[in-house]
Each structure stands twice: as structure tokens, then as C-alpha cells.
Image 1 (cartoon, rainbow, N blue to C red):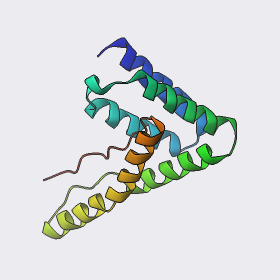
Image 2 (spheres, one colour):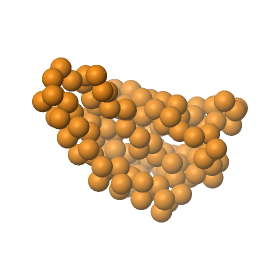
Image 3 (cartoon, helix red, strand yellow):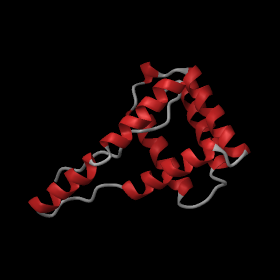
Image 4 (cartoon, helix red, strand yellow):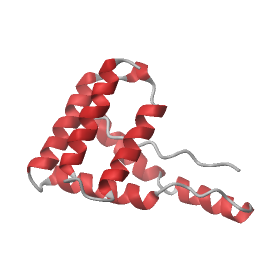
Length: 132
């Protein structure tokens, strides 16, 4: 893991914590999303300008309660309630997990389009679905 990627993670996490004012559970949701994104992401897709734009977005969310703050608040709210899928105990649980998991596909598509249009890299990857 290169030092630029480690520094990017630290900067995103630090500015994210400032933007949510270290509140719980937003800080833990942000931490978990960043961890999943950096652990499963491809290091070859690392882009410093996207990191800089995302940090600028987080700084805007920190400065005032404007559009950036409300967007980040809603992202974290949905991500918190999305949660991690539970291990299924039977076929019915597995079907419910799959439905719950795929219900967020339009939401993830919107975040992907926001990232693309603004040149950012907000984490949109979900925790992996558990198959037991």
C-alpha cells in the first residue's frame, strides 16, 4: 500500500470526522464505509484530484450547514440504516437479505453519478452480502 493512499484515507477520515462533528453513530458509519472502500478498491484507480475534490466537499460540509452538510447527513443516515446484512438462517432470510441488499441499487447509482459529475470519490460500496 503506497503512502499516497494511506494519506488519502487519513485526510478523508479526518475531514469526515470534522464535518460530522465527531457525532455518533455518524463517525462509525463513515469509518466503516471508508474502510470498505479502501480495502476493496483497486489501487490503480487512485486519483488525487478526486480525493482533493472530496476533501473540499467535506470542508464545505464543515464550514456551514448548506447543501454539502445536508447531503452528507443524508448519506450517513441512509448508510447507517442500510447496515450490514445478517447471516441467513434459512431460505426466507436469504431472500430477505437479497431484497434488502438490492433495494439500495438506485441510491448507489445516484451516488455514482454525483461522484462522476463532481469529480469526487464518495464511498458507495456496500458491505459484502454474506452467503452462508
